[in-house]
Length: 515
Ligand code: KIV
Ligand code: ZN
Image 1 (spheres, rainbow, N blue to C red):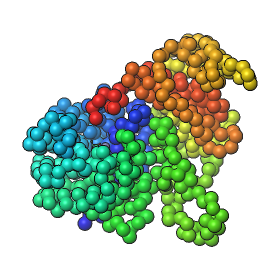
Image 2 (cartoon, helix red, strand yellow):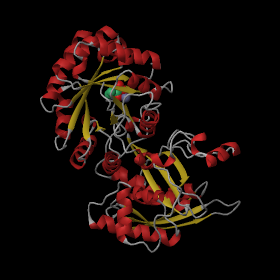
Image 3 (cartoon, rainbow, N blue to C red):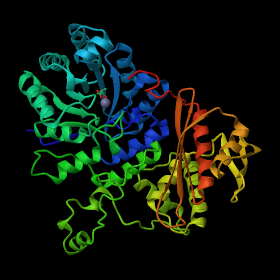
Image 4 (cartoon, rainbow, N blue to C red):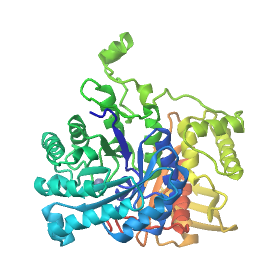
């Protein structure tokens, strides 16, 4: 049996379907670069028919990524497939992933199609996709609740029509590990041409079983697994990439395959995704949670000091953990700065971008003399790579708070290059600052999330703020970091407003109702 496990990452597509986890094209690109560096085999970059913004983001990723296959999702419709084909055209290696539901409830209630019509549409769509590329994936949506006889017919027909990967989704996270493994084994045994396609799985986490179901399927022969960084995804999320990859690698005795992944990039990817989406990683999350390798109990600490293997089954450094170490300081030069960012998967397209980021780094180094990787990542996440073209920029912020008094804020900001000042009172310093900004821009946006994290430890650590704003169906996450958390909050708010105003406005796929 094939011993290579193909890692198909769908953070940028299914992951983005998490309510609130919207990303702009620049953010998607940055995540794609880290995934490429991690040697992910296939990056599902988006759903080109969902919006112009999605189309452009997939096209940009297809242009810039060279070492991973870039995939675009398409419903089993002519226009979706044609748009996906157009979006992945620039890719060195491109895939079209087309899907149609096969469960009785989805066919009857959602599609209002007979099984025969679904079968015909599936075959037609795969043939259409094959007219553009040799790499075509087909998914019978809600396979986990489909009738196995019908699934066998559909899979046989789409493989005959040219599907090179057949993906079995547990769309609603309903399956149990033994049952899901039996389904995958049954399909492989019963579909006469099953040896002509790679079997893939795509599990959702509604019962907390996405990783267990994926691993059960891999044990019986699935050779592609669809997953996301930090398990991001619709509702309770998808199977988590880091957990699957590390389970397979750590338990080589139980699996007859392994991935090609460079696992040392896992933590960088996890932090970047958490940073960009504003979805914090729980401390006890396997592999990437802050406590994943921390030993609290004295008896454990003693054991680990005597022999690491007494309590550790993986090496923290194999997934990218290092002791918080100072990577750069006040006296570091541009080259060291550029090199370290490159190692973190961040590259500059122009000298201006590099200069802008370097000058922000110098400002930070003046306030905080030890700069860690996490500081550098947030320095870039905060404004993207190009802050020179931002419509709104913070110039100064003055906030007065005193016990028993109502906090007041006065903000001066540059609006299209013209300085404007506004003041407001609020229930706290952050509320007052946001109101002062609104007194100038009057955006009518709704604040959906406000979260503060400290980037590293110590009282001089930067506070990193995520602000999620919604305006007429557009959802964006703004980021700001500063050693002063009120300033970080104002920066995050302005960053979100800039994103709402940017020309690449796109409706979140959930809101457009396409999936
Ligand atoms: O969950 C699902 O069924 C999907 C398909 C589009 C593969 O995301
Ligand atoms: Zn899904």
